[in-house]
Structure formats: C-alpha cells, structure tokens
Image (cartoon, rainbow, N blue to C red):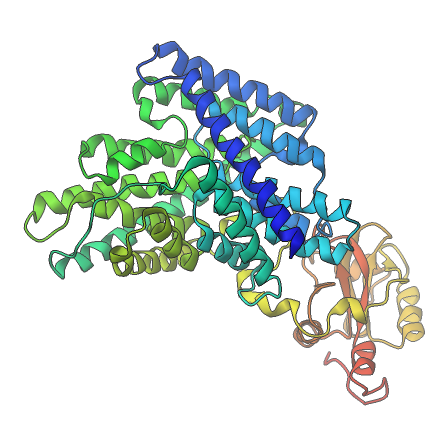
Length: 550
C-alpha cells in the first residue's frame, strides 16, 4: 500500500509534466493564426524525428501503450524497462506536440505501468508482486491524464486486468486517488471539458440519442477496420523503412491542417467549443471525417500516441453533427447540439475501445454533469452492440493478434481462476519430428501411454497427430508429415488456462494430449498437458478408464 502511494505521486508528477510539455510545445510549434507553412512542416519534421528515435533507440515505445502494458502483464512477467519509459515520454512529447492526430492517455498508461514495474524491481519484489503493480501504475496514469480517478480504476480493472474483482483493487484505488490529488495540486480543480447545464426537452430525444448510438457504432467500426488494415499495409513494407513510415502520418496531417487547422493535435480545445453548442455543422462534420482517417493513418504508420483522445474528438464531432441536424429539424423538441456532442463522445469511446462501463463514468467525471447519464447509457449500449457485431475482436486484442500475441479475451475472463495448466504441464518433452517415420510416432504413443502427441521440432510446433489417424489413413502414411498435410490449425492451450479449458480442447478435438504454447507465439511449445496428468491432479489416477474419444 505504501508503494502504491509512492507510485501515485511519481506517476502523477510525470503525467503532469507530460501534459504541460506537450501543450506548451504545441503552442509554440503551430500557434493559432500562425503561418500556413508551420501546419505542413511541423507534423512532417516531428514524425521524422520521433520515427528515427523509435526505430533506432526505443522500438518498444511505438503505439498507444495499452497493448504494450497488457503484453508486459500477461507475457513479460510485469517487466517494462526504464529505457522504454523514457523513450515513450520523449517520443510522444515530440510527435504529439507536432500535431499528429493521436492522444496522450494511452502513452501515459504505459509510462505509468513502466514506472510501477521499475519501482517494483528496484524494491526487490517478486515477479508476481511486480505484475500486481502494473494496473496500479496504469490507474494512476489515467487518473492524471484524464482527470477521472473513478474511470481510471474501472479501466485498469475492466480492460487491463479484465477482472472487476481483482485483489489489487485497494492498491489501484489508492494510486488513482493519489495521482489525482497531485494533478489538482499543480493544475487546479477544473474538469477537462466545460458543458452547459442539460435537461431533457422531450422524450422524443431518446430516439435521437438511439440514432446517435447507431451512427457512433458504425463510425467506430470504420475507425477500427481502417486502422487494422492500414497497419497490415505498413507492416508489409521492408523493415529498413520502419524509421521513415511515421512520416506518412505527418504528411497527411500537414495536408489536412493546411486547409482545416482544427484537425491538428488531439483537439480538446475545439471539443470544448463544440460542447458549448455554437459551431458550424459543416466544419464539425468535416472534422469527424478527417480525424476518422487521420488517426488510423498516424497510428498505423508507427507513431507513438494513443487513440483515447481522438476517439473522444470523433465522437464529439459526430454528436455535434447529429445534434445540429436534429435541432434544426425539431427545434422545440430537442436540446442544444452540445448535449449530443457530449453523448457522442461516450458512444464513440464505447464503440472503439469497448469499455462501456468505463466510458459512461469517464464522460460523467470529465464533465461533472450527472443529468446526461441516461442518454449516455442508451447511446453507449447501442454503439457497443453494433461495434461488437461488426468487428468481433476489440481493437486492443486485434492489435495483439497482429503481433502474434494471444491475450486473454473479454469472453474468457474466468480463464485465470482455478487450477491452471502450468501446475500440471510436463515441460521436459519434445514433439515428434515432422519428417519422422510413422513407426516413430507409434513408439512415442506406447512410451507416453497416450493416443496423440504434438508434431514439429524443438523451436516450431506444427500440429498434433492421433493414433486413430494412422489406423484409418488410406493409403497408409509413410511419414508424420503426411498426417498433418493441409492442416493449419491444431488444439493448444496456454499455461494460464484452467484445466477445465484443457479438457474442453481434448474433448472437442478427440485427443488426450494438448501442447502448451506461448501467448506470444502459438508455434513455441512450452510443454504438454495430458489427460492422465489432469486425472491424477484430481485424484482419479491414470487408470480411471477415461480416454479421449477418437
């Protein structure tokens, strides 16, 4: 608990410095009303410098920071280097101050998690304790970056850990509150956005908020799909161009900023203006489309920055557009367009980030307007549902899959409870060589007293074979390779899966041995879990008569 307080103070101070540095640098680089050449040159030069630093010195500082924090938690035993923390701070300060369409909240989360990891290791804590500190640092960072201590706690538990009842809840709350107090002592007690008082004019508005939820959900799907596809495109380029790729985002921002300066940066100042309700609807609609294109381009090209802030900006512009149209059509039945901009922020955040509970609380804390909660819940739920149906993987899980990393999914948050595979797995085993004769596989079955076994070599798993395949193949196979020819998928489990999941994999695939693989690479075998071993763990022994169905 004492360390949680220390983390809260240090992370709070770091994030405040991050906010002040990026804001003041941006004001100097492209001041309002400045020369047009600045709006072109600054984003290009900023992304060029940060791109070189990322490629040459800080390769782990790319991206938003949320997936990287989850990688550290679930794969790297809570390890984030001090070099990565410094690189994230430096590169994000340069790129965000140059005006690219990314936000500071995601990077703040990785910085906070990194500070917690470094402090935990310096204090000599165990790997398990260091892992437990990561959500503590994440919560402290988000509380200071967004000025939302409650939402920071919820996000750390809902998205980072995936467990709202995690045993670190007390530490997460403590660090969030401490960081928030540091923010207020330095920057004062002001909400991130200022909104006029809202009240429901007519029940007809609920239908309009539902329409806003639909539009927000569809826009969220477009955003995520565009980002993922652009990322595949940039990853297909030669590795030698990695340092130059971020400039593509800078060039696009320069072109957009030349004609519409409001698109530069995260745009919180203009969001505050839109929430007031006095804005040209054409400009707001254009900004929504521009940011919807610019943010995926900036992120996918390899810049350091997050998607939290841009998702709020996009939502505000979409909400302002829908609200303006509704108010122009039904002036006596609808509220000020600014109210719809506020709800649109939550709808876009819920659809893109897929944390509906956090998004509701976050918008409430940022504006301190409780009266908007019900419309916000309606739009958020609809946006979340549409996004979930049209884009099955949430954005952070999809980004992890592109890296070949298999994080615990939202549908399997109970995976980390009960007896785990790692407690019964066999590690000193090797797969049957892919080019081995079938007789070698039969000998392995007899030796291990099983009916199935992994196939591959010491560094690359390629499949799982069964004795039933050998007996029923026509013509008889000559080598093991013939048994898995044309098969790309195979059953596997991760070390942190429960034994119940391993049994389900055995039942579904008709095997009694399942390889245990790395979450970072499903072709890297860590060991095997056997039906005999699971039965022994539950005191049933290997002679219970239970076998996997062929």
